Length: 474
Image (spheres, rainbow, N blue to C red):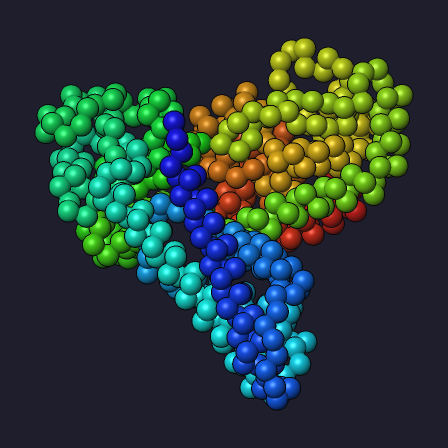
């Protein structure tokens, strides 16, 4: 099956590169025909030299990186044309200012007014061409959505008049918002709503949501449960927590008056969108870049220490140097976490157990490694391959995760981000010795998730370093 969204994203990138190339060519001609003659007093022949061709190759790459970091290529089907103009204006302004200090400030000019002319001309050329092409792309996508050629596979959770009314409104709207309804699920044991069945099929109960999302490739879930019914609403959102879908809730009058409803589309149907993306795109990219760079730095610079620890582990007790265990990662996907072995082999013959402060299963060298958290060092390999991050909630085994969910269903919120070598919960609370302590530590990790940023990550890392230096691990 052809992935139309990927094709449109590539076209978006391609037209941006074309706009950047044309803008730079016109700007080059402007400098040669206006700025340089003004300085030297005579017209200079327009020659496309080596520097021009080099810039023609590098400048589009420069703009691609800037736009990528700014999140311009994220889900091109959901772009607002008005928002696209303002977003392009801001990114272009920043990009042109940076180009001025990188390339243009060394130009020989008659006066500082030439700098202003050059910068303004480059801005107008690049912004004008880029915006024009982007609006053409957005116009084409909007028409494709309106005609039903493309859209978002949508599932409705709800079986009452409220769900029927919103589906009816969306289906009959002259402004097609791209919802391709696959069906609805009931949020109670009642019989399916007859009027709703006339619009789309019933696919079962909401407990079947994970299977239905995968089966029908669902991208949007509209939750028709009353927003005041917090218990049932939380239950449904917890089921959907690990799934790559966009969640929207049908608001009531109180939600609208209290300001919880934000309009993404002036004419479209009012829905509360549960935004799970707290960090802006540039911070997401920077976080991954820091993960890679710090991991490489640690793995290379501390290689002699790793070798020494490996020997100590090897000769301290029988068994392998490294300990490998399956944990739950991003969106609850299992992965194998790596550590230096700190326990005697076959330490879990009686089943999964959490370690305690005076755990007899821990080897003598293992106690030292745990105290200074040196046993965690191999996890930088997990970070390097993208299974973990430097900062994020500590990953748990499915055995314990299932127990935590029974007590605190919102534990699934932790799977919205990659697990980390260190976490705010670990810094503020420390290691947990039982499920109850895991639940207690949970509030710190949720607090991190709802407020995560590069600044918060740096703060967690600083506290972690202090913990290591003070030997407060266990």
